[in-house]
Image 1 (cartoon, rainbow, N blue to C red):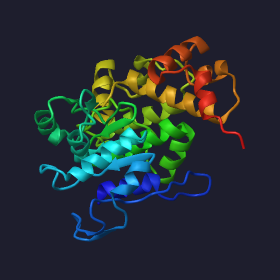
Image 2: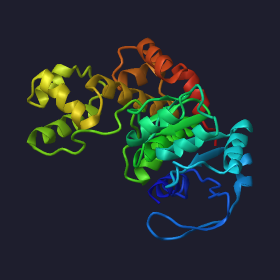
Image 3: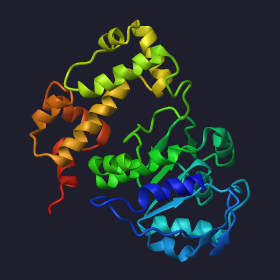
Length: 302
């Protein structure tokens, strides 16, 4: 039910100005289905709905260790063959693997079941530490709340950063976590005064992206040595200060490209890159297209 709630929150109805989707729950046998909360769920649609879907998300299910019905595997393959995006998170990834959609691809799942996935499907390159892995029309995510990261990534990829950020704000969630970030953190929530200082420094950095922000300066503001700051930062965020800043700068640049007419040179300055050339280099390397091409892709005329 957690996974269903996550998908429904992202792709279900939102406020005015946010995207609406033709959302449907499908199963091999429509009708009441038991859930892990003991509340039955009514499934109205059969597998025939999958073939024409733009996006199919395979949800986790308790019986993932047992073989799936051939009709389910055929329906997932048909959705992919017809040009749809196919995704899964947590143990839902096992359904995509069973359908052969992950052969020769990278994939992730809940860290607790990553070894089982790799052992059962040796043709899949399992990456147990990733939050989500985007392989084009196949995307997989880690367990539990990482489903939000997967769904928001898909929304960001197809509709742009501004739309994904608006939906994230509607759900009171962080707008973006990089897919390479660790699944689980030693100290995900600040627990003492040092972590409170770290939280304050992170908030300050968000407001000063236009500045260079070397790690030494961040550590000084946190009243820590560079080594201690890097260690505490990794424990709190699952990534390095450099990688976090890079992701934040690119995400901010995406939103400015989508929502403003600012020149690329000015956007580069606002997000902390020394020149438009540096922003372009990072954009091409991390997003696959230059900033101006990205802007054209997500510019919507009224």
